[in-house]
Length: 143
Length: 219
Image 1 (cartoon, one colour):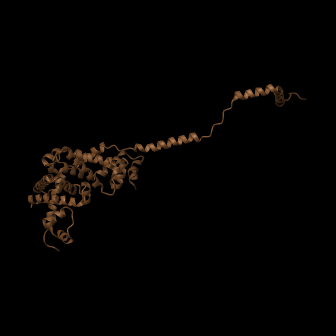
Image 2 (image 1 turned 180 degrees about the horizontal axis):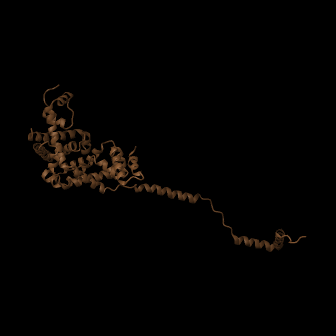
Image 3 (image 1 turned 135 degrees about the vertical axis):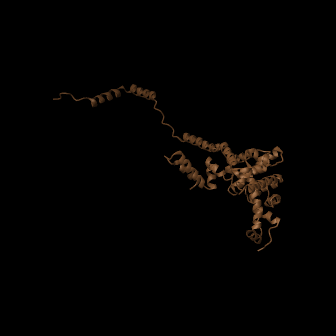
């Protein structure tokens, strides 16, 4: 193990987060003086950070940011394809529906019946006689 | 358990008092990982977003303070960084660290503010933080074991603040992102939009200057 203390450049590298050779890193682990030198600088740096951004101030900043945040809802452009599909479906439904049965034209039918009766009035009489026969009530005293 | 279930399950307890539900919800958020919190925050969960950012907000405020100095409102800048991050959560890609992404937003926002104001940043504890009601004594003193140690720690902190403020802009960025956002060299390079070698150069110069100032003041 190397016994010489860290030179300035090595200490700067170590502070900056870079690796030294394994031999020099072993020295740092074993040398209280070199570790103290490093920790002295890191403590001063950390102290400045604590002063400049106290936790309660940071909490206030975060609360303010969250208060201003409006989470976005579903993106509006997602509704466009949905609307297009809906319009298409309705359109297809209209065009593929079977044609409606033609409505009965009662006036025309009556006119046709009248014409038939005019040609053959007996047909009406016979049918009425037959109807009377079928629906005739039996006599009350048949004995 | 995914983030959605973890966050919503506790709210579904039918007859629990509101406070109990809230406590359970907070506990649930506390055990969620960053990825799950991120997923919940992306769905608009405000509590999850708060829990996600609470691990980084102090570092972001430090970055903004050191990069901007007293000439700019660092609190407003940090708030803007957090808000931009919240509005852009969908753009964050897991390839990098979340803190690195936040630090990159902070770095560019601070650069932009300084560029627009054309102010050379200068940080002074008296002018910069005391104005904000940040009692330097309280935060540094709590670390010391006795009054003499506390006084020395306070002086050292003031010295570092002055030295960092006096660094050239890019050195200050590298130093701040390394020590106050605690980023790795690759993350710093990404945040500063330079290569790692450039970061090392800036960082070594900055560390050398600050280290010498500290050791000269307190050998």
